[in-house]
Structures are given as C-alpha cells and as structure tokens.
Image (cartoon, rainbow, N blue to C red; front, side):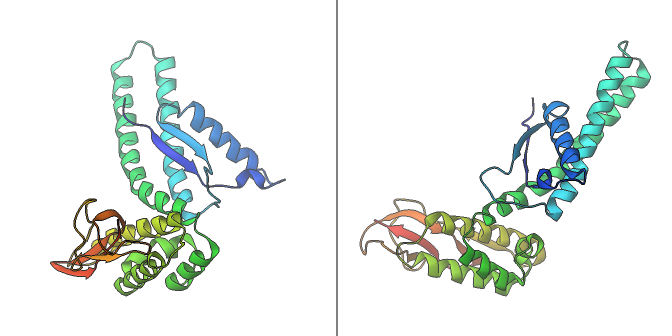
Length: 245
C-alpha cells in the first residue's frame, strides 16, 4: 500500500462557540479518520502554535474531494457487488481523480513543513521575518524566495546568529531550513539557477568554502554544517557556516 498522506491540521476551529464552526470541523476530522484512514494520517496542531491559513483552505478542498470520492467508491461496492462493467469504469474514474488530487496535495507538503517550523520561532526572529517579508503572515513569509536581495539578507541574518555564542540551535536550524526553501522558490523564478552546498563532517576546514561558527576550534575538522552555502552558477555567494572541532 502507498504511504499515507500526513495531514497536520493547523486549526483552532473547535474553539469557536455558537456558530457551528466547531461541530463542522470535528465532523471533518471524524471523516478523515474513518473514511480516509487508508489514505491519511491525521494529527492536530502537533507541537506547534497555529492558526487557520490560506494554505489549509486550498488544501482542505482537495482533501474534501478525496473523501467524497472514497464515499462514492464504497457506495458502488456496497450497492453493486457483482462489479458490473459500468461500475468498474466508474471506479477507475474515481481512482484516477484521486490519484490526480493526491499529486496536487503534494505541492502543499513542503510549504506546510516550512510553516510548521516558522510557528516555532521566538518573537525576535518572527519580528525580523515580518520586517524582511513586509508582513508576518503565511503568504508573505512563504513567498520571500521571489526576491533575491531579501534572500541574501536572510542568509546574513542567520550567519550573524550562528556567529554569536549561546544561541538556540533549534532556532538557527529552522531558519536555515527556511533559507533552503527560499532558494528552491528562487530557482522557480530565475533563469540562472542557484544551488546550496554543505561540507561533509570530517573534512578539513577550508576558508575558501567555510566560515567558523561560534564556539568552534581554530584547528580541527568540520564536525557539522550549520547553515549551507549558496552558489549562483559556479560562483560562491555565501560560504557554508560550520562547526569545527
């Protein structure tokens, strides 16, 4: 069986009283966990502070359609156990549509992963991203990669954090992953492609490719890549930030 689609519902719908929002939301969750149990692994606001956002609205339209198709399939099987030719054709049509919907869903997986990380950033880092992106809302932050200059500013900000001692490495890791996502988007927008690179642990420290992070030894080998470097064509724009030990 194919891997299930992992759905992390970023929603507070069940906290709205008196408008029917919560009951409708809970019914949808129930459908996902029953009718869609073979296709979806459902989790609710897992380890993150979250809110309903535009990504979820588009995503849920596709999930709703997949569930609707699954219900239609079950009805065909229940009402027509003989598997008549007409029913077989209808099943194939439903299966084909669901395959297409799941491919469309895959487009959302990476942005949802990035946004889940952004939600775990501290107030200082969120404030910085809000200023850099023009707003701290989901669409502004996820579309930063369209602006090469702002991507460069983001890398410089992460570098400054990595060069300071006593920094929360989880925060730096989240920002570094976000930086990589921005490069992916930048490559969708620009003709000349960008690439990221890292230095393998155990490699000799090379000043042409690396920058030492805070608390690194002056002599030693690379122990970890903290922030990957960036190339534009063959030219290195940003060196890799590494720990040396």
